Length: 133
Image (cartoon, rainbow, N blue to C red; front, side, top):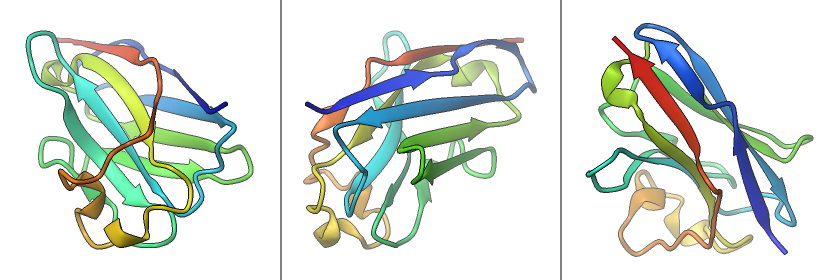
């Protein structure tokens, strides 16, 4: 059974940094899309960072580009989101997501992992990030 467990959220002042972790069990992130999403109260869920683990471009939403970095530690089977220069508008629940192993190849092109046709099979429970001004 696949489980994704996020950690690392918390409260931070504007301009601060946080690193979120997403530890996977039952899933190796092999040849699939992995991503971080966020959802603020009253707003739709937003994809903010994603890449195809078999090799390809990493894509970021404009709102987080140059401030956030998505990465993966194969040995630890963990996905990360490094967040710097945090702003109050970054306040949201953050979720990691992964597709089914071995099924990401058709989406390896740039922005493929954010395409409407791609279904993320696995989601974490979320971790709250609150940024105060």
